[in-house]
Picture 1 (tube, rainbow, N blue to C red):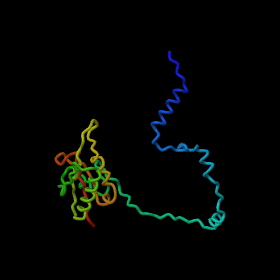
Picture 2 (picture 1 turned 45 degrees about the vertical axis):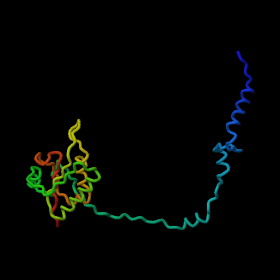
Picture 3 (picture 1 turned 180 degrees about the vertical axis):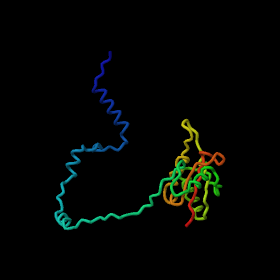
Picture 4 (picture 1 turned 90 degrees about the vertical axis):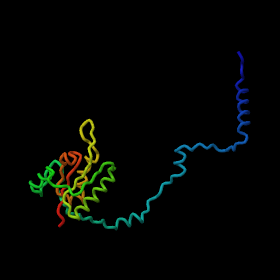
Length: 193
């Protein structure tokens, strides 16, 4: 068994280390961070409150806020399954049965949600001001394990309930199978006043 003196190994290692690092820049101070307590004691000074500012603030009168009454058009939410008020039963049944011939068709296949919403807003407002009454929006339907669950199919009826479209739309209904069935939506617009 060989006996090795610890001090010899340490000296040899230190000499080797000095030889390797002789060209490196050596720092006198350690670059360790000071402990949090030392930093807090050295940098934080208690500040006395400015009494002049506090006295001046006491003389300021509080602002009185008044409620503004905003009239909102409380329109009934549209749903493709329901007949809203404000439309005759005969018109509603004609729309549901596909008797209204769609004057414009908007096909959303391949559109992202954002782009589809922009297109719907643009086309419906143009159609309304051009006095077009019936629009067919093809959302498409994605079949999953729970039936059709396409994002646009789910989102488009909600978009039609938001301003400025809700004020222009009279009724919505799912299309008949000839026009796309549950993957398409009839939109009946109000007449321009």
